[in-house]
Image 1: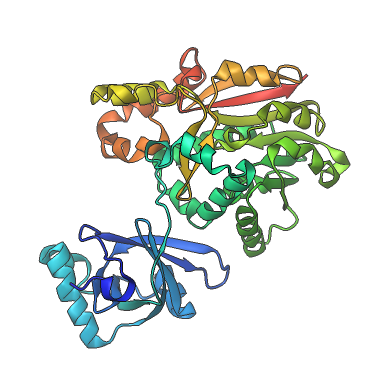
Image 2: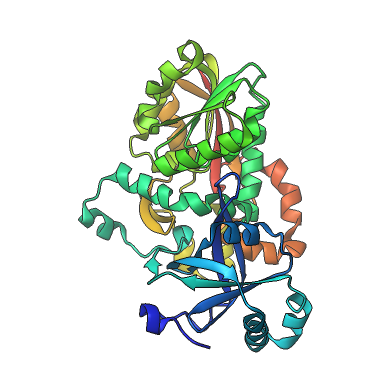
Length: 414
Protein backbone atom coordinates (compact mmCIF):
# COMPACT_ATOMS: atom_id res chain seq x y z
CA UNK A 1 0.00 0.00 0.00
CA UNK A 2 1.31 3.39 -0.96
CA UNK A 3 1.96 6.08 1.64
CA UNK A 4 1.30 9.78 1.30
CA UNK A 5 5.00 10.53 1.56
CA UNK A 6 5.65 11.34 -2.12
CA UNK A 7 2.88 13.91 -2.19
CA UNK A 8 2.89 15.44 1.27
CA UNK A 9 6.03 14.37 3.05
CA UNK A 10 3.91 12.72 5.75
CA UNK A 11 3.12 9.00 5.81
CA UNK A 12 -0.11 7.49 7.04
CA UNK A 13 0.65 5.39 10.13
CA UNK A 14 0.44 1.68 9.20
CA UNK A 15 -1.72 1.11 12.29
CA UNK A 16 -4.38 3.59 11.13
CA UNK A 17 -7.45 1.41 10.77
CA UNK A 18 -10.07 4.15 10.74
CA UNK A 19 -10.46 7.54 9.14
CA UNK A 20 -12.65 10.44 10.24
CA UNK A 21 -14.66 12.06 7.46
CA UNK A 22 -16.13 15.55 7.88
CA UNK A 23 -18.77 16.66 5.36
CA UNK A 24 -21.34 19.48 5.32
CA UNK A 25 -25.06 18.83 5.30
CA UNK A 26 -26.57 19.36 1.85
CA UNK A 27 -29.41 21.50 3.17
CA UNK A 28 -28.22 22.70 6.56
CA UNK A 29 -24.51 23.26 5.94
CA UNK A 30 -23.90 21.71 9.38
CA UNK A 31 -20.87 19.47 9.97
CA UNK A 32 -21.55 15.75 9.57
CA UNK A 33 -18.86 13.45 10.98
CA UNK A 34 -18.40 9.71 10.49
CA UNK A 35 -15.62 7.30 11.35
CA UNK A 36 -15.09 4.45 8.91
CA UNK A 37 -12.57 1.99 7.48
CA UNK A 38 -10.44 2.97 4.51
CA UNK A 39 -7.54 2.03 2.29
CA UNK A 40 -5.01 4.35 0.71
CA UNK A 41 -3.45 3.63 -2.66
CA UNK A 42 -1.85 5.59 -5.48
CA UNK A 43 -2.41 8.95 -3.82
CA UNK A 44 -6.07 8.46 -2.90
CA UNK A 45 -8.26 7.24 -0.03
CA UNK A 46 -10.91 4.67 -0.98
CA UNK A 47 -14.02 4.28 1.18
CA UNK A 48 -16.85 1.78 0.73
CA UNK A 49 -20.42 2.67 1.71
CA UNK A 50 -23.12 0.05 2.23
CA UNK A 51 -25.86 2.44 1.16
CA UNK A 52 -25.66 4.96 -1.66
CA UNK A 53 -28.00 7.25 0.24
CA UNK A 54 -25.84 7.46 3.37
CA UNK A 55 -25.57 11.11 4.40
CA UNK A 56 -21.79 11.22 4.17
CA UNK A 57 -21.90 9.83 0.63
CA UNK A 58 -24.57 12.26 -0.58
CA UNK A 59 -22.93 15.20 1.19
CA UNK A 60 -19.44 14.57 -0.15
CA UNK A 61 -20.53 13.85 -3.73
CA UNK A 62 -22.85 16.87 -3.79
CA UNK A 63 -20.02 19.16 -2.64
CA UNK A 64 -17.22 17.38 -4.44
CA UNK A 65 -15.07 17.93 -1.37
CA UNK A 66 -14.52 16.57 2.12
CA UNK A 67 -12.11 16.75 5.07
CA UNK A 68 -10.24 13.60 6.00
CA UNK A 69 -8.64 13.26 9.44
CA UNK A 70 -6.34 10.64 10.90
CA UNK A 71 -5.03 11.47 14.35
CA UNK A 72 -3.46 14.91 14.16
CA UNK A 73 -3.43 15.05 10.35
CA UNK A 74 -6.20 16.71 8.34
CA UNK A 75 -6.50 16.80 4.55
CA UNK A 76 -8.76 18.87 2.31
CA UNK A 77 -9.82 16.48 -0.44
CA UNK A 78 -11.81 16.19 -3.64
CA UNK A 79 -14.37 13.38 -3.95
CA UNK A 80 -15.69 11.28 -6.82
CA UNK A 81 -17.16 7.85 -7.43
CA UNK A 82 -14.46 5.27 -8.00
CA UNK A 83 -14.41 3.56 -11.38
CA UNK A 84 -15.34 -0.12 -11.57
CA UNK A 85 -11.72 -1.23 -11.74
CA UNK A 86 -10.79 1.01 -8.81
CA UNK A 87 -13.61 -0.46 -6.75
CA UNK A 88 -12.40 -4.01 -7.38
CA UNK A 89 -8.87 -3.01 -6.45
CA UNK A 90 -10.12 -1.26 -3.30
CA UNK A 91 -12.00 -4.42 -2.22
CA UNK A 92 -8.81 -6.42 -2.66
CA UNK A 93 -6.91 -3.88 -0.52
CA UNK A 94 -9.67 -3.98 2.12
CA UNK A 95 -9.34 -7.77 2.28
CA UNK A 96 -5.56 -7.49 2.75
CA UNK A 97 -5.92 -4.83 5.45
CA UNK A 98 -8.98 -5.98 7.39
CA UNK A 99 -9.27 -9.64 6.45
CA UNK A 100 -11.24 -11.36 3.71
CA UNK A 101 -14.02 -12.56 6.00
CA UNK A 102 -14.83 -9.07 7.35
CA UNK A 103 -14.56 -7.57 3.87
CA UNK A 104 -16.93 -10.09 2.32
CA UNK A 105 -19.40 -9.72 5.18
CA UNK A 106 -19.45 -5.90 5.32
CA UNK A 107 -18.18 -4.51 2.04
CA UNK A 108 -18.63 -6.97 -0.84
CA UNK A 109 -22.13 -5.59 -1.55
CA UNK A 110 -21.30 -1.94 -0.85
CA UNK A 111 -23.36 0.28 -3.14
CA UNK A 112 -20.74 3.01 -3.51
CA UNK A 113 -16.96 3.21 -3.54
CA UNK A 114 -15.67 6.78 -3.20
CA UNK A 115 -12.28 7.98 -4.31
CA UNK A 116 -11.00 10.78 -2.11
CA UNK A 117 -7.91 12.61 -3.31
CA UNK A 118 -5.97 15.02 -1.04
CA UNK A 119 -5.67 18.50 -2.56
CA UNK A 120 -2.29 19.06 -0.95
CA UNK A 121 -0.22 18.51 2.15
CA UNK A 122 -2.09 17.85 5.39
CA UNK A 123 -2.41 20.38 8.16
CA UNK A 124 -1.56 19.25 11.65
CA UNK A 125 -4.36 19.52 14.16
CA UNK A 126 -3.93 18.32 17.71
CA UNK A 127 -5.91 15.24 18.60
CA UNK A 128 -8.25 15.96 21.51
CA UNK A 129 -7.67 13.68 24.44
CA UNK A 130 -9.10 15.33 27.54
CA UNK A 131 -7.19 16.01 30.72
CA UNK A 132 -5.43 12.64 30.51
CA UNK A 133 -3.59 13.25 27.23
CA UNK A 134 -2.31 16.81 27.11
CA UNK A 135 1.10 17.61 25.63
CA UNK A 136 1.59 21.13 26.99
CA UNK A 137 2.58 21.79 30.59
CA UNK A 138 1.16 24.71 32.53
CA UNK A 139 4.63 26.24 32.66
CA UNK A 140 4.98 25.98 28.87
CA UNK A 141 1.60 27.62 28.41
CA UNK A 142 2.46 30.47 30.80
CA UNK A 143 5.80 31.07 29.14
CA UNK A 144 4.01 31.53 25.82
CA UNK A 145 2.21 34.53 27.42
CA UNK A 146 -0.95 34.12 25.35
CA UNK A 147 -4.22 35.82 26.23
CA UNK A 148 -6.36 33.36 28.19
CA UNK A 149 -9.76 34.30 26.78
CA UNK A 150 -8.43 34.35 23.23
CA UNK A 151 -6.82 30.93 23.75
CA UNK A 152 -10.05 29.45 25.13
CA UNK A 153 -12.11 30.93 22.29
CA UNK A 154 -9.69 29.54 19.70
CA UNK A 155 -9.72 26.11 21.35
CA UNK A 156 -13.50 25.92 21.28
CA UNK A 157 -13.53 27.32 17.74
CA UNK A 158 -11.30 24.39 16.80
CA UNK A 159 -13.57 21.92 18.63
CA UNK A 160 -16.84 23.24 17.16
CA UNK A 161 -16.91 21.14 13.99
CA UNK A 162 -16.65 17.79 15.81
CA UNK A 163 -18.14 18.83 19.15
CA UNK A 164 -21.58 17.24 18.74
CA UNK A 165 -20.07 14.07 17.30
CA UNK A 166 -17.67 13.76 20.23
CA UNK A 167 -20.40 14.22 22.85
CA UNK A 168 -22.84 11.81 21.18
CA UNK A 169 -20.25 9.04 20.97
CA UNK A 170 -19.36 9.31 24.65
CA UNK A 171 -21.74 7.37 26.90
CA UNK A 172 -20.80 9.25 30.08
CA UNK A 173 -21.07 12.67 28.43
CA UNK A 174 -24.53 11.77 27.12
CA UNK A 175 -25.53 10.60 30.61
CA UNK A 176 -24.31 13.88 32.13
CA UNK A 177 -26.19 15.95 29.53
CA UNK A 178 -29.51 14.20 30.18
CA UNK A 179 -29.21 14.49 33.96
CA UNK A 180 -28.28 18.17 33.69
CA UNK A 181 -31.25 18.99 31.47
CA UNK A 182 -33.52 17.08 33.83
CA UNK A 183 -32.41 19.20 36.79
CA UNK A 184 -32.88 22.37 34.76
CA UNK A 185 -36.38 21.44 33.68
CA UNK A 186 -37.33 20.87 37.30
CA UNK A 187 -37.07 24.64 37.98
CA UNK A 188 -38.31 26.06 34.67
CA UNK A 189 -41.77 27.14 33.62
CA UNK A 190 -43.31 27.32 30.19
CA UNK A 191 -43.32 31.12 30.24
CA UNK A 192 -39.60 31.44 31.17
CA UNK A 193 -37.03 33.08 28.91
CA UNK A 194 -33.74 31.44 29.86
CA UNK A 195 -30.13 32.62 29.78
CA UNK A 196 -27.39 30.10 28.91
CA UNK A 197 -23.69 30.60 29.64
CA UNK A 198 -21.34 28.58 27.45
CA UNK A 199 -23.90 27.25 24.97
CA UNK A 200 -21.35 25.46 22.76
CA UNK A 201 -23.10 24.22 19.64
CA UNK A 202 -26.47 24.66 21.31
CA UNK A 203 -27.51 21.05 21.83
CA UNK A 204 -28.99 21.77 25.27
CA UNK A 205 -30.67 24.97 24.08
CA UNK A 206 -32.34 23.15 21.19
CA UNK A 207 -33.63 20.41 23.51
CA UNK A 208 -35.01 22.90 26.00
CA UNK A 209 -36.25 25.67 23.69
CA UNK A 210 -39.52 24.03 22.67
CA UNK A 211 -40.69 23.80 26.29
CA UNK A 212 -40.00 27.43 27.31
CA UNK A 213 -40.69 30.91 25.96
CA UNK A 214 -37.16 31.30 24.62
CA UNK A 215 -33.42 31.23 25.32
CA UNK A 216 -30.56 33.69 24.98
CA UNK A 217 -27.58 31.40 24.33
CA UNK A 218 -24.12 32.90 24.95
CA UNK A 219 -20.59 31.65 24.38
CA UNK A 220 -17.06 33.02 24.12
CA UNK A 221 -16.38 31.10 20.89
CA UNK A 222 -17.53 32.78 17.65
CA UNK A 223 -17.43 29.44 15.80
CA UNK A 224 -19.68 27.78 18.37
CA UNK A 225 -22.13 30.68 18.06
CA UNK A 226 -22.00 30.50 14.25
CA UNK A 227 -22.72 26.77 14.33
CA UNK A 228 -25.68 27.25 16.66
CA UNK A 229 -27.04 29.97 14.39
CA UNK A 230 -26.91 27.54 11.43
CA UNK A 231 -28.83 25.01 13.52
CA UNK A 232 -31.42 27.66 14.40
CA UNK A 233 -31.83 28.42 10.70
CA UNK A 234 -32.14 24.74 9.78
CA UNK A 235 -34.66 23.99 12.55
CA UNK A 236 -36.53 27.30 12.17
CA UNK A 237 -36.10 28.18 15.83
CA UNK A 238 -35.56 31.93 15.35
CA UNK A 239 -38.49 32.74 17.62
CA UNK A 240 -37.05 30.54 20.37
CA UNK A 241 -33.25 30.93 20.39
CA UNK A 242 -31.16 34.08 20.22
CA UNK A 243 -27.36 34.18 20.43
CA UNK A 244 -24.71 36.50 21.84
CA UNK A 245 -20.94 36.22 22.05
CA UNK A 246 -19.95 37.08 25.60
CA UNK A 247 -18.03 35.50 28.48
CA UNK A 248 -19.42 34.61 31.90
CA UNK A 249 -17.57 37.41 33.71
CA UNK A 250 -19.47 39.97 31.59
CA UNK A 251 -22.83 38.23 31.60
CA UNK A 252 -24.69 41.28 32.95
CA UNK A 253 -24.23 42.83 29.49
CA UNK A 254 -27.00 40.50 28.30
CA UNK A 255 -29.63 42.56 30.17
CA UNK A 256 -30.57 44.51 27.05
CA UNK A 257 -31.33 41.22 25.27
CA UNK A 258 -33.52 39.77 28.03
CA UNK A 259 -37.25 40.54 28.25
CA UNK A 260 -37.62 43.17 30.97
CA UNK A 261 -33.84 43.13 31.48
CA UNK A 262 -33.77 39.93 33.56
CA UNK A 263 -34.42 36.20 33.61
CA UNK A 264 -35.87 33.83 36.20
CA UNK A 265 -33.58 30.95 35.21
CA UNK A 266 -29.99 30.87 33.92
CA UNK A 267 -27.83 27.82 33.38
CA UNK A 268 -24.31 26.70 32.41
CA UNK A 269 -23.28 23.09 31.77
CA UNK A 270 -20.34 20.90 30.84
CA UNK A 271 -17.54 22.84 32.49
CA UNK A 272 -17.96 26.19 30.74
CA UNK A 273 -17.36 27.94 34.07
CA UNK A 274 -14.12 26.01 34.58
CA UNK A 275 -12.72 28.08 31.72
CA UNK A 276 -13.58 31.40 33.38
CA UNK A 277 -10.61 32.77 35.38
CA UNK A 278 -12.83 35.62 36.58
CA UNK A 279 -15.18 33.17 38.30
CA UNK A 280 -15.41 35.30 41.45
CA UNK A 281 -17.03 38.05 39.38
CA UNK A 282 -19.70 35.77 37.94
CA UNK A 283 -22.11 35.58 40.94
CA UNK A 284 -22.38 39.38 41.16
CA UNK A 285 -22.77 39.59 37.38
CA UNK A 286 -25.52 36.99 37.45
CA UNK A 287 -27.31 38.69 40.33
CA UNK A 288 -27.82 41.72 38.05
CA UNK A 289 -29.81 39.70 35.51
CA UNK A 290 -31.51 36.96 37.58
CA UNK A 291 -34.73 38.11 39.20
CA UNK A 292 -35.31 37.70 42.98
CA UNK A 293 -36.01 34.06 43.83
CA UNK A 294 -34.71 32.98 40.44
CA UNK A 295 -32.37 30.07 39.76
CA UNK A 296 -28.93 29.42 38.37
CA UNK A 297 -28.35 25.75 37.47
CA UNK A 298 -24.72 24.97 36.65
CA UNK A 299 -22.11 22.25 36.64
CA UNK A 300 -18.37 22.49 37.20
CA UNK A 301 -15.57 19.95 37.09
CA UNK A 302 -14.55 18.77 40.54
CA UNK A 303 -10.97 18.96 41.83
CA UNK A 304 -11.30 15.39 43.18
CA UNK A 305 -13.21 12.57 41.49
CA UNK A 306 -13.64 9.42 43.60
CA UNK A 307 -14.43 7.07 40.68
CA UNK A 308 -11.35 8.35 38.84
CA UNK A 309 -9.12 7.61 41.84
CA UNK A 310 -10.63 4.12 42.24
CA UNK A 311 -10.26 3.34 38.52
CA UNK A 312 -6.57 4.25 38.50
CA UNK A 313 -6.01 2.52 41.83
CA UNK A 314 -7.41 -0.76 40.49
CA UNK A 315 -4.74 -0.83 37.79
CA UNK A 316 -2.06 0.34 40.25
CA UNK A 317 -1.53 3.73 38.60
CA UNK A 318 -0.76 5.33 41.93
CA UNK A 319 0.62 8.51 40.34
CA UNK A 320 -2.86 9.18 38.89
CA UNK A 321 -4.94 8.78 42.05
CA UNK A 322 -5.37 12.56 42.36
CA UNK A 323 -4.50 14.03 38.93
CA UNK A 324 -6.57 17.17 39.62
CA UNK A 325 -4.87 18.15 42.85
CA UNK A 326 -2.81 21.01 41.43
CA UNK A 327 -4.82 23.78 39.81
CA UNK A 328 -5.23 24.92 37.13
CA UNK A 329 -5.04 21.68 35.17
CA UNK A 330 -4.23 21.46 31.46
CA UNK A 331 -7.01 19.98 29.30
CA UNK A 332 -7.31 19.30 25.59
CA UNK A 333 -10.12 21.06 23.72
CA UNK A 334 -10.31 20.79 19.96
CA UNK A 335 -6.76 19.47 19.93
CA UNK A 336 -5.43 22.50 21.82
CA UNK A 337 -4.19 22.45 25.39
CA UNK A 338 -5.59 25.12 27.69
CA UNK A 339 -5.60 25.66 31.48
CA UNK A 340 -8.87 24.88 33.22
CA UNK A 341 -9.75 25.58 36.85
CA UNK A 342 -11.39 22.74 38.80
CA UNK A 343 -13.03 23.37 42.19
CA UNK A 344 -14.06 21.68 45.39
CA UNK A 345 -17.87 21.91 45.70
CA UNK A 346 -17.61 23.80 49.00
CA UNK A 347 -15.19 26.30 47.46
CA UNK A 348 -17.40 26.92 44.44
CA UNK A 349 -20.54 27.32 46.56
CA UNK A 350 -18.70 29.89 48.68
CA UNK A 351 -18.14 32.10 45.61
CA UNK A 352 -21.92 32.38 45.20
CA UNK A 353 -22.86 32.77 48.85
CA UNK A 354 -23.27 36.57 48.93
CA UNK A 355 -25.92 36.42 46.22
CA UNK A 356 -27.21 32.85 46.01
CA UNK A 357 -28.07 29.89 48.20
CA UNK A 358 -27.23 26.33 47.09
CA UNK A 359 -30.56 24.47 47.09
CA UNK A 360 -29.21 21.23 45.61
CA UNK A 361 -25.73 19.74 45.09
CA UNK A 362 -25.35 16.64 42.97
CA UNK A 363 -22.48 14.48 41.72
CA UNK A 364 -22.46 14.28 37.95
CA UNK A 365 -21.87 11.41 37.77
CA UNK A 366 -21.26 10.33 41.35
CA UNK A 367 -20.51 6.62 40.82
CA UNK A 368 -19.79 6.29 37.11
CA UNK A 369 -16.27 7.17 35.90
CA UNK A 370 -15.35 10.50 34.28
CA UNK A 371 -16.08 11.00 30.59
CA UNK A 372 -12.51 10.39 29.41
CA UNK A 373 -12.79 6.81 30.75
CA UNK A 374 -16.13 6.25 29.00
CA UNK A 375 -14.78 3.85 26.37
CA UNK A 376 -13.22 1.62 29.02
CA UNK A 377 -16.43 1.65 31.06
CA UNK A 378 -18.62 0.94 28.03
CA UNK A 379 -16.62 -2.17 27.14
CA UNK A 380 -17.28 -3.51 30.66
CA UNK A 381 -20.81 -2.11 30.92
CA UNK A 382 -22.51 -5.51 31.00
CA UNK A 383 -20.62 -6.36 34.17
CA UNK A 384 -20.67 -2.86 35.69
CA UNK A 385 -24.25 -1.84 34.82
CA UNK A 386 -25.18 -2.10 38.50
CA UNK A 387 -23.37 1.23 38.87
CA UNK A 388 -26.01 2.89 36.70
CA UNK A 389 -28.78 1.55 38.92
CA UNK A 390 -27.15 3.07 42.01
CA UNK A 391 -26.09 6.30 40.31
CA UNK A 392 -29.48 8.04 40.54
CA UNK A 393 -29.79 7.48 44.28
CA UNK A 394 -26.15 8.26 45.06
CA UNK A 395 -25.86 11.41 42.94
CA UNK A 396 -27.64 13.69 45.41
CA UNK A 397 -26.63 11.81 48.57
CA UNK A 398 -23.82 12.87 50.91
CA UNK A 399 -20.91 12.26 50.53
CA UNK A 400 -21.16 10.95 46.95
CA UNK A 401 -22.61 14.24 45.72
CA UNK A 402 -19.29 15.95 46.54
CA UNK A 403 -16.92 13.60 44.72
CA UNK A 404 -18.23 13.21 41.17
CA UNK A 405 -16.40 14.05 37.96
CA UNK A 406 -18.59 17.14 37.87
CA UNK A 407 -20.76 18.78 40.52
CA UNK A 408 -24.16 20.18 39.59
CA UNK A 409 -25.57 23.06 41.65
CA UNK A 410 -29.05 24.49 41.78
CA UNK A 411 -28.56 28.00 43.19
CA UNK A 412 -31.44 30.28 44.14
CA UNK A 413 -30.99 34.03 44.32
CA UNK A 414 -31.37 35.25 47.89
